[in-house]
Image (cartoon, rainbow over all chains, first blue to last red; front, side, top):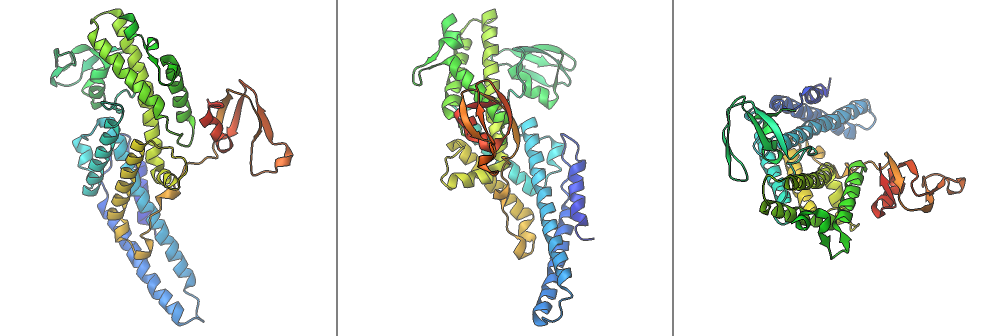
Length: 195
Length: 214
């Protein structure tokens, strides 16, 4: 069946777990493109025959079906690529400008390129807000308290706070910190909020 | 010190609005933005004003003595305002990213632009990036007659229904333009009344503040 491989790509998107990115299916994309090329060539042939011999219209339906399959393949392929970009964008907001290695390794080189461009665009925008810029990736949750209690999940060495004091982030140690300073560490999974 | 730290003590002479009024407006546009299917007209007058005040307040706080109850209360207040502002701008960005192409087209068509200059730059860079990616990863390798790409078709649906509350009276609001106008499908907005309506016919009421979304 035509379009089967393209549908498989869409299914792959659907299966993708939250917070992760499935490997870029280069093979699948190539196969869809090959199928499209084959359909296109078959259509070219039939069309030129139709033009030559106008009394014989039997292949008209085949041309139409192939054409629809081509459109469908195109749409699925674009949806696959576009939704991956959306996913990468989501992860950018979650993890910050440096994505974890397991996500990076699943991106295609072209997606990497897009990602660094997106980063630049976003950074430019956030810098343009007000005088000193405003980091929109902070303050994702409505604040409850200025300070929150956190437990350290992994050894992370020293953390310097805005007021100049330093604290040692050791595994299983508990801290009482300003929320604005540890929000990104919580999202990275270094700290855990104790409620 | 109390006065310099207090947000309602700061006044904005340019617009003859007190800070608390500006804050109220921010709250209003924040709610509307989060609930409307379409991007609202940009209100950089409000956001710039709030940003300035946040910065001023933060300076005051850093000058003030640490470990004082008053300071931490003010800090929390600043955090809350910053959250509202960030959330508002984030919400706009999400919509802009989703409908970048159609928004750019709208701006180019000479309609009143919903985008601030910065947001326009953002939208343009973003679409060019997405288009380049789709082009180089797939479209370039497709048969010639299929290489076209039209992202502009992707526009928000204005037919969604929204909850709204009326702030100032308005008579003879047309509920549905497409149906026969003599058939009495006009309603009068009374202050405080709440309705569920299609977004499209009331879009300009949201912009002008006649109604707020709920």
